[in-house]
Amino acid sequence: MSRILVKAEDIRQWVEACGGYPVMMDVPDGTRSRTLLQLTFGQHFLNADENEGPDRPYGYELVSWDEWLAELEKQNLALQVSDDPSGGNEQEYRIIGRHDDRNTA
Image 1 (spheres, rainbow, N blue to C red):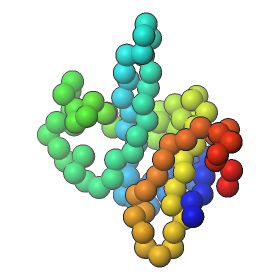
Image 2 (cartoon, rainbow, N blue to C red; image 1 turned 90 degrees about the vertical axis):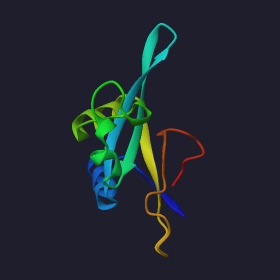
Image 3 (cartoon, rainbow, N blue to C red; image 1 turned 60 degrees about the vertical axis):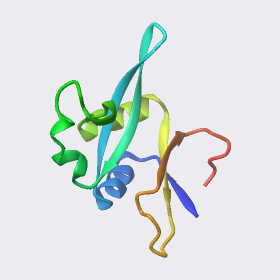
C-alpha cells in the first residue's frame, strides 16, 4: 500500500525520518532547461568528495528544502511513499504528478 504526500511539511518529515536530503539537477531540454528532483538517503552522498563543484555525483546538487519544495510545487508534483508497516524499504518513493488519474489515494 502507498500514500501520496502533497503538503510540504508532510514530505519533509517523511524524507528526514528516512535520513533523506533534497537534491536537484538542471538538464538541457531543447532551447530551455528542465529541473529534475530527486532524494538521496544516508550519509554517503553528503560525505563524498565529489558533492561539490561541476562534477557532482550523477549531476545532482544538494539544495535547501525551500528550493526543492518550491520546484516541486512549480512542477505540480507530489511524493508517493510506501505505507507498508511491515518494515519494507522505507526509502521507496516516486515523484508523481499531483493530478495523475492513476494516483488516487
